[in-house]
Amino acid sequence: MLDRLSHNWRVQSRRQFFTQAGSGLAGIALANLLHQDGALAASAPVDPMAPKQPHHAPKAKSIIWLFMEGGPSHIDLFDPKPKLKELNGQPMPASFGKVVTAMGTANNTLMASQRTFKQHGQSGLWVSDWYPNIAEHVDDLAVIRSCWADGLNHVGSVSQMNTGDILAGRPSMGAWLTYGLGSANRNLPSFVVLLDDKEPVGGTKIWSSGFLPASFQGTQFRQGDTPILHLKAPNGISDEEQRGKLAYLKELNQRYDQQRSDDSELDARVRSYELAYQMQSAAPEAVDLNSETAATKKMYGIDDPETAAYGKNCLMARRLVERGVRFVELYCGSGSGWDAHNNIEGNHSKWCRASDKPIAGLLADLKSRGMLKDTLVVWGGEFGRTPFNEKGTGRDHNPWGFTMWMAGGGVKGGQTIGETDEIGLRGVGERYHVHDIHASILDLLGLDHERLTYTRNGRAERPTIVGGSVIKNLTT
Image (tube, rainbow, N blue to C red; front, side, top):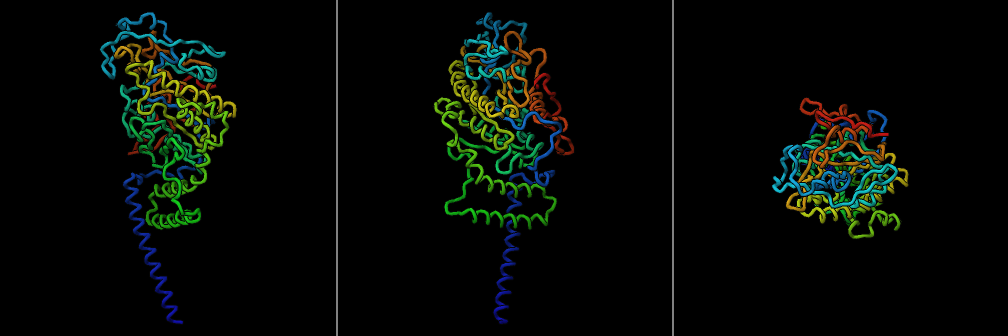
């Protein structure tokens, strides 16, 4: 009897020893990984993804950002310029001022648009023949023609349109929104990024959380049957075994946390493991487009090779916001596809075909389901394109005056806001900087961009840095 008790005591002692030792080693390893990930920053809430109260009543619950990367030409799509046609082939008049371009364009004779513009809908908004399907939805669009930005190149401009700064490192808009409102679901990420082919210029930094806790960064979904990598458990691992592993990992983390109560990021990391487990059951259903009807797939253009990629992403976006994802960003032409320095007719014809029907399908689908009223849809690139030519048949970068549009989510449709000069070079009158765009988006989602702050190095940082105003007359 004594031998048995002695044996059990030795067994329990060995187990206790190895458990405690394992916990310590795991804690050291976890701390090292957290340091490598930059995840030991302070100021994270106990549950960073818990829903938070907005500053004021929101008009929108979620946002779908249709990012046309590379710089779509506003003067060939939404901003017709009769004067440009009149001056076609002539040098730019000195009255429009000196222009320093990204590519140092030498042959800067003015180049009229070759597209045909028509007025559409009850509002009579102008849209070119490159976007015939989107033109059917103009009464839902607020077309902002006098946008402007600070960067001349793609890397800085894509960064600014996402983060507010031409220098990488600040939090993206999706991260700020998640930080401000938390998550509206517990089984999927709150901030999702969808790519069509290549990685955007600037890479993953443009959807990072910057100096905010890592919990708020975007989650990239990929094309294909497995948009979320490493989500599926290895073959042969049952759900019970997977749950057991996560429970044991949670226990080890909690023991580590007891010794370091000031490590607020550890709890966020533990919760990310929980989210990964929950996603194993929720995400496959959310990203499974096979459950959609053939008519719905056709509406998004999934049956056509030219529109299938963006059509799938647009349909995926609708399914995600339907399930509580707050921010979905869809890149069209990722890797600067719209960058038409040469042969703008060929370049834009390709990308307009790729995006027109899917975007129109998204707007129609959201509206038919009653979702457009509280889903904000944003369209635009990092800048527009110049009214003078480059290489004879292309256009250079234009951050001084370009077009973006918004629909749904409390936006008053069927209107144009702001304008560019007679040739579409610069915004005139009321001009709207990227910070104004961001301030307006946050306002529609119930957040005051001046009150949404995060203390960093003794300074109250905010998404619009030191600028930004909500665009007047944008909302209903």
